[in-house]
Image 1: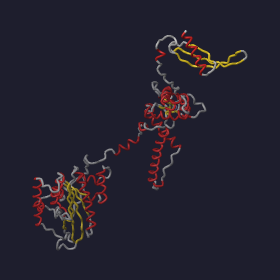
Image 2: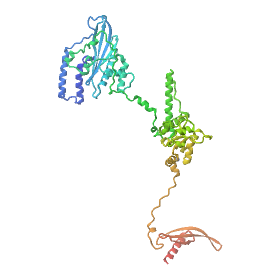
Image 3: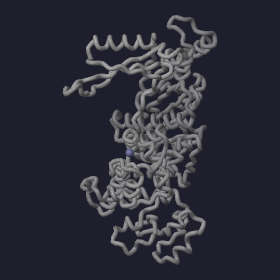
Image 4: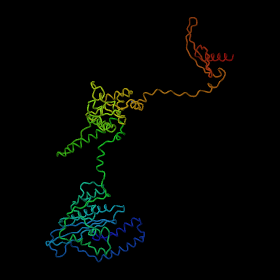
Length: 530
Ligand SMILES: [Zn+2]
C-alpha cells in the first residue's frame, strides 16, 4: 500500500515500483483484476529487491566519528530526467578544521514522467524546479548553518534557459525558469556529465545489485575533493529549436507601426472612426509621457490620461486622411509631388498620365495631399480653397454619409457642396455620391413615387361579345336645376351603360326616391323591348 521512506533515500529502487503502478493505471484495470503476465514478472522481480533491502544500513548521524568540529556545511544538489521519470538528490558536504571533507546523502526524490508525452528537456527543467524546491525545504528543516549551495544538471539546455537574460519563453518554460531564478541565482548552476550525475539513478531506477555497487549514498568523487574547481570557461548556452522560444516577439511590435485600412471597414460612422483613432493617439501620448517621466526620475503614477478633446479628434481626422492617402496614392508614397507651392516645380513632379495631374496637387505642411486650384486669392478658408483629395473607399463613404446627413438628405449637388466646404475632394465624386444617395434608406423612402394599386381582372360580362344592353350597369347622377314656368325644380340623371360596347342610355329622374328609380328602369326596359 505504501512505502515508508520520507527522505527518499531509496528513491532509485522505488522508481521501478512506481512505474509498474503507472503502467497498471494506463491499462485501466479494476482494483481486483489479476495482474497481466508482463507486469506480474516485473512485480515479482521488484519484490525481491525490497526483501534484499534488509542488508542495507545507513548511519543516522551525518557526521562520522572522530571528525572533530565542523567548520563549514554546504549543500550539493543534483537533478536529472529520463523518459521514465525524473529525480533529484542532495548531499551534505562538511569540512572540519583539518580541511577534511565528508559527504552524506540527505534527500532523494524520484517521480515518474507524466503519461502525456513531454520532451526530455522539459522534464529536465521540471527536475531543476524540484531541485530548488528541495533546497528551500532543506534550508528550512536542517538545524545547521548552511554555507554555499551548488546545483548540478547534465542538461545544457536547462543551463541555457536559466542563464539567459534576454530571450522570452513560452509559458511552460517561462514559469519554471522564473521559479528557478526566484529560489537560486544562475551562477549557482553547473554542468555535470551524465556518468558523474548521481541523480541519474532516481531518474531511471536501479536494481538492488546496481544500488549496492553505485555511489548513491556517498555521492560522486568530485564533491569529496577539497576545493571545487570553479568553471572558468563560459558554458555553452545553446537553446535548441524545440523549446519554447517565442520567435515573433519583435515582429508583433513592428506590425502595429502601420495601421491597415481594412481595420476601419467595420465602422459605421465617420465620427466613430475618428474617435477610435483619437483613443489610440491618446494612449500613445500617455505612454510617451510615462516614459519621459521615468527617464527624468519622476513618479509615473502622477502622469494622467488626458480627456478626449475636440483638438484630439481633429488630429485623429488628419491622421486618418494621411493614412488613406499614403495607402492609396503612389504619388504620395514616392513623394513625387513636391511640398513646394511653386507651380512649375510641382507640375514637373506630377506625371502627365497621373489621374491627379489635372488637380494640380500639392502636399501641405501636415503632409496631406490637397487640390491646388486657382482660388488662392479668394477669402474662403484654406480647406475650402484646397480640399484634401480622397479615393473611393469605405472611409470616404463615411465622410459622404456625414455630409449628406448634415444637409438633411439633400440631393447630389447639396451633398457635394457640403463636402467641398468641409475640405474634401473625392475623385469621381458625382458618380460616387449619386450611388451613395441611391442606396440611402431615408432618401429612398422620401423620394419614391406613390405606388398605384394593380387592377383586378375584368368580369366575364364585359369581355364576351353580346347584343347591345344584354348586360348593363346603372348609376344615378345629378342634380340639375331646371325651370318649369316660374318654378325652379331639381332633376336627376340615370345612366345605363352597355358592358360590352360601352353604349349609354340616359333617363331623367324626378327625385332620388325608389319610385322614381323604378319608373326610370321600366322606361329603359320598355324602350329596349320595343
Ligand atoms: Zn439620404
